[in-house]
Image 1 (cartoon, rainbow over the protein chains, first blue to last red):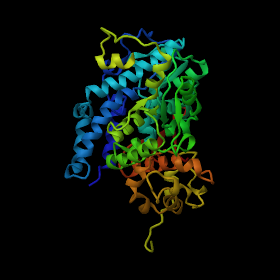
Image 2: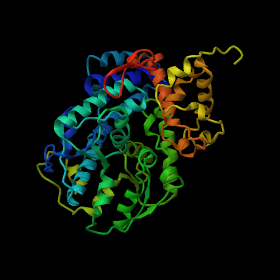
Image 3: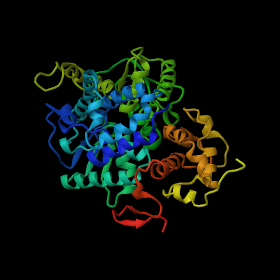
Image 4: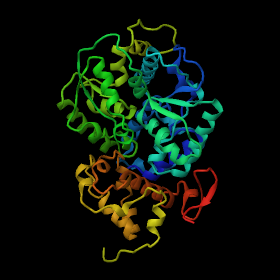
Length: 339
Length: 124
């Protein structure tokens, strides 16, 4: 028996309404990645993560749970979980993300911050106010709940005096740049992906990396937001040879990730098909630029080929190598990761 | 299909978004050919069902509607300029409100939030 769509979407909507995120997590966990980086609190220009990279380890753990429920008699009882979740944050209690995943995704954000710092871009961070933008609710067609949440985000940004947002993932970029102006009155913030900001700043690589990689365009960056040339320019300037898969740029092929919470098995099939296309193009590693693509393609690869966020490839060229940080409050693997 | 019930108000209940344009589909099939999921039903047949007011046929396909990745591979190649992703999102919204009982304050005829943050009756 397939998973009950209404109950799963309902659970996300309940969380967004009651806890301001489709998958709530504490501010302490969501902001831990920024420890020790010296990013000022607030300012006119802020790095806005929308908590997507922070949420992915928990979402991945939840999907593993749902995979076991999908097509079993347990799927009939998901509605009970939804009702219990209204009282207790069951979604957070049920899914236990791996420490390695948490460290990996925190490493992405730390590298993005360091890339911007290295390029001389001034920015702050909103720490506990860095709210989820609502992409999953919007994509699920929950327009009323989404609009209410978007107004909360707008009010917070007005209160904090923010004028420019530097985003880190395509879904948050799309919400803040293209959807919020349609839904909200008076939304006039400038929104740019950090890839666009770095490319426009003409960031200079500190060292050249001679390596073949294959690029996977995010559907949302490529087809919704037109972010196609910037990641390629940054990689090529760093010395990488960028291989293009059969479906690339505006014709990119989805990773399957967007449906993994509702149809985990089908999502995996799509991920495997995309990985085959990427492997056929050749390259020592797959470059992704979206947390959902990163998770889906890493699952599909099962270690057969490195699948990494573009920030890792860029940091190798644009950031100085540094010894692992001490006392920054991050697991050693992350400290190494960001070095 | 011989006993299909026609719901004349169905398309208005689905088309709350100003960008909804299922009627622009000319049924050429490019969308089905470019779909990573291999969904043949979406959007051609399903959009036709909406326009014809065949509510039951659409509701039966709730799983297919939520299987769409919203990746826009179809929309990128659509020769008729159909806003496929927005149309699918509109169908999801209809199912959320009318079938799953979610987001009900956004129903047709109900007071719903507007861009101005005030409330107005949807579709008059």
